[in-house]
Each structure stands twice: as C-alpha cells, then as structure tokens.
Length: 289
Image (cartoon, rainbow, N blue to C red; front, side, top):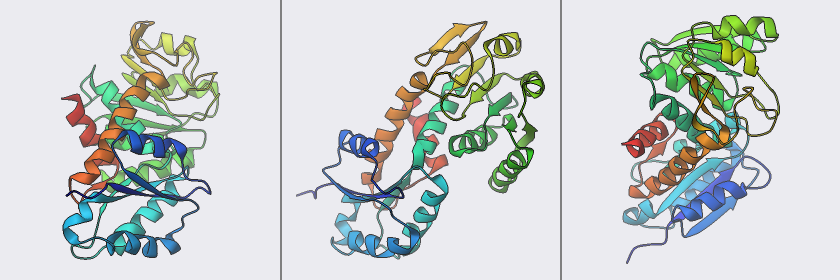
C-alpha cells in the first residue's frame, strides 16, 4: 500500500504561503506540513523529522518545498536541506521562493516558442531581482546575448558576475537604466524584451517599445498597473501589438502554474530529485513537447 504524499513546506516568511499550499494540493499532495519563519539554523531537525520517520523505500512519498518571498533566504535554507541528507536518507527538494524559478522558466519558454534564442539579442529590465536574475541565466544558458539592466550599474555588474560564475560562456552586458534617456540604447537591436520589475512601475513606455523595430517578443511580468511595458495588457498571450508579440503577466502565468504543479508532482517520482532553476526549466521544456 502506497504511503500518503507529504510535502514539508519550509517558508522563510513568518506565515507559510497560501499560494504554494493551494498549488501543492492541486498537484496531488495528500498532506502539507507547513513551517513559517524558517532559518538555516532550524532546518536540520526539520529534515531529520522528515527522513527518519519512514523507511528508505517510502522516502519518495515525502518531499521538501522551500518557499517564501526572499530568494536569498530560500537559497540558504535549500543549501541546509541538502546538507542534512546523507546516503539514502534523503527526500526530493524544490526551491521556488517568490515563484522565481517557475516564473523565469515560463518567461523564457514563452519567448522560445517564437524565436531561436541562440545568438539572439535580449534585454532584461530590472534584471537584478529574483526573477530577473533567473531569466538572465536561462537566456544565457540558451546562448542569447543579454543586456542586464538596472537602476544601478553596480547591481547590474553583480548580476553579470553571478551568472557568469555558473554560465562560463555567457554573453552579458550590464547597463544602467535609471533615466529615460538610457532606455533607447538598452533596446537598440533587441529581439526579446523582458520587464521583470516591481509592481506598478513602468520601465519602458508604449512609444519606446513601438519604436523598437527589431523587437519580436515583449514579455511583461508585472500584473499591477501601471504595467512594466506600456501598451501591453496583463492578459496578453502572444498578442500582436506594434508589430511584435506581447505577453502580460497572466499570459505568462498560465505556463508558470503548469510548471509549478508538474514540478511538485515530479518530487514524488523518487527521493533524489533536486529542482532548482535549470531543472525546473528543463521540466518546462518537457511540458512544451
């Protein structure tokens, strides 16, 4: 008789995410053990509670999900989870703090449906946030040249450094876009434009976007008006606007939800899955067919 599927949710926020809990249930999880305010110092005992209560043959029915709004904190918790495992005493584990991995995967997959990413010029606005960094990395992994834009040049340079540490042949250009005068240079010749900025902040106007004759796909990940890309609607899904295809946050969100549910389900295929940015992106490719 198969064991109930248990997902141990380690959330770095004081209250565990309702969103992540609902998605887990919809993905087929039987029981959620939800912990809020998780720090690296308390992880080991939580993991031991998960791996010492079932026989080795049943550990694939237990998995760990690391969430919360702070991706850096989530990465530290994820590292401690993996460090607590030894030998066969382990469970599968997934990191998706702030939805960063699943959203980035869905974003790059949306662009990939319409253009070949290898050798392409892409621009990522607000590229130094949790989602933006992962979009930059996935685009670099696909062989695109990426302009990494931020209000502060130092932040853009740091993101480039972090991505190049894991993608040695990445073609990245850090740019400061703190004023409107800098934006035309950031968009010149770009074929894919991603806006991954904070809610209610327009990063590029509709006029500027429309004037970018090289642009083929524009993706805006902000769902709160005013949106990040002027003239793009939140529900856009490959909608033609000004001669290029546009995606709004909800247009990307459908794929993000499919990836999120599939990733949670994948955790229970064995007890050795580690789902981070690249693994979740690879799963998204499988779903695309």
